[in-house]
Length: 358
Image (cartoon, rainbow, N blue to C red; front, side, top):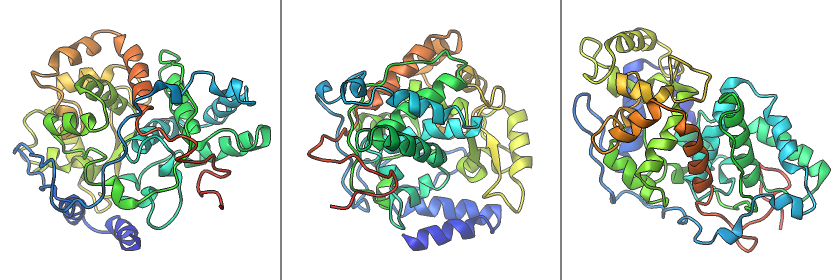
């Protein structure tokens, strides 16, 4: 895994073409075929090169989690403490906190395994090298340990922080109650971030639907949760299959956006160059994403895939109303049940980056 981290550093120093090749080679090593511009990308649901098991399925019992859990567990101020930490974050870090929740829950379940530090942990997995917001989670944990030591799990802090970040970025339009009571997992492996867990940016709709279904989420959840791409940034190699070659970008991308992206990403520092995922309202968690899907102003193949006969009606619905705000909160709650750990399966970490000493 240490070799992978070194490669990630080297990638920022090499040319755009080399970086793109290196990026896809990581996915190829797990059985994915390299995407080719203008050609639909196919998904093999069971590549022989996958060696790690899938994460636990969604919890089948809602009894594990409760809204207001910490009021009944001697830490009634828990959510306020997390909110105070989140309110100090910049717009970019707020977007990162939402993404952090996705990347935690889709790998081994919502158990804060993405927070564990080490050379071979999820944090060092290729899709997670650009995650942000760890310092906010750590600050909240420190404050919580002062207030009520050994009570609030890091997994719940991640869930609370994603909700609070959504609330701020949506100008208070997205607000939902978070069922809590998760315990923190003790296992975190870099290889688990690839394979069948985190959907790649070049996935088509069939792939997205299958990968979400593996987590107990349906195609509506695919559409709703993808809306989080209305905030945050992306590195150029993540959408290079959509804009290259420069003379003929993807036919379903807005030509003006394609030209701008080619110019921005055609630099020696391509690997570290970033662009806003939503060029219209980059710091607002809103329904602009769905308008962008319809107009071809999205970055990823996985975003453009939603402009499909299967999902188009729902995309149009969210593009034309604020219904998405409520739907997003409900989908985040649903996602929060993936692979929930009980006290027998996990612990309450004293520090979010390390497991407790036995």
